[in-house]
Length: 141
Image (cartoon, rainbow, N blue to C red; front, side, top):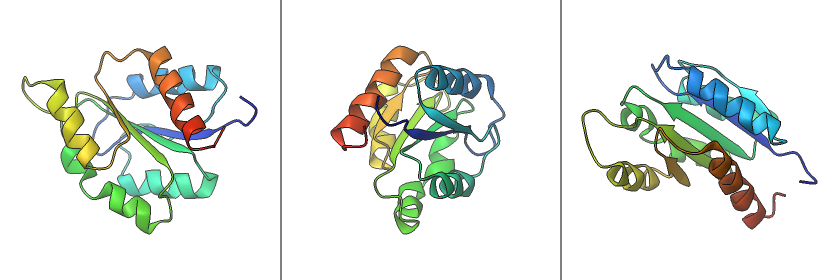
């Protein structure tokens, strides 16, 4: 990469599961990204503020407590209102409660405006390559 893209990572809403976000942040940092870690229990507005302050290229959110849909309703609209139309939105983790098909989560979160949706067992190398591909497609790297 010639330009070092900036990404925002964190665990959204009332979710205190921070280990996955720490692993994600480390992997992306090791892959050459500028990573701004927000940690756990992060309100959606903090993701938006951090993306504005850093001119972020992407927001990568994690959620393992199953309530991400409630936390993220209207998030894409808030991003647009904040002038972040071009920021890539990724989410991953346990996105719903009870047993269900991940494909349902993927459809649901894409309708909420997320560019990519990852299951809890997602491969980090693939996620890094996906982000590079998406940034390249938008002319950001």
